[in-house]
Length: 256
Ligand code: SAM
Image 1 (tube, rainbow, N blue to C red):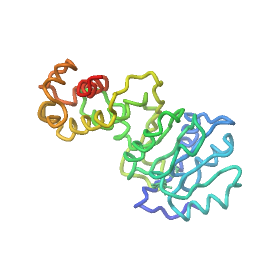
Image 2: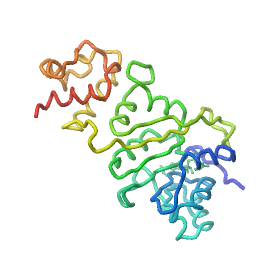
Image 3: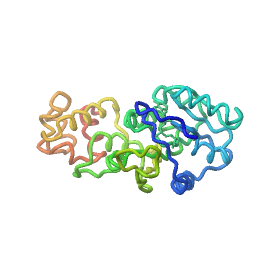
Image 4: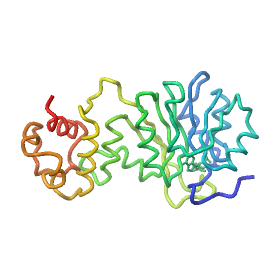
């Protein structure tokens, strides 16, 4: 029997077998892989992944669910980390880590940023999220969904929408459509900003006031000379800039 879902923890349990199998097929788990599942809940995905991957690490914030998982799986098969995935140190697990899960939708954006901060150690991620968030992750410049999340994740990952999942696949059904997204870290040789903190600040400024021109939105960070050096018209809006152009702008502020 399913435990009573706690709304504040974003608990919508995937109960449709067809979609459970499709997610497992998308993950394609293999023996010997290092894998962590975020938000295992009652363990429907966990059980299927643990048939292949030993040990499977899981991080679950709900104490009752964590202890039910400990009771159900042998400790050498599933290692249950009870706690907040937002504070979990993914660097404590082996490199080449695969990160998967049906994420709690109430904290999906901070979780994506947290996971992204470990990108160099990660082989790939397969996540289920609100479809609306996945649309923002994969959005192209100049489209309405394109924003800070798109730029900051596309800076580190190649991402693709795998397939959509309807609300009826969950118990209880969420109010929104869901989708499975695959994220693969870009290679070490990818274009990178010299000052990543500045890059992040410029992206933040560009999208906090997305209707403003870059000259106005990023005034405190980028001067006219830097726009000129980067070859970017300050009369453009941030939402029209691709990742490479944001990198060029940040680098033009710190000519090396
Ligand atoms: N994987 C299960 C499934 O597909 O049925 C449950 C998915 S449910 C959408 C999200 C799960 O994440 C819940 O079990 C919830 O308790 C857990 N959770 C919520 N916030 C969390 C956090 N900050 N850290 C770790 N787990 C969290």
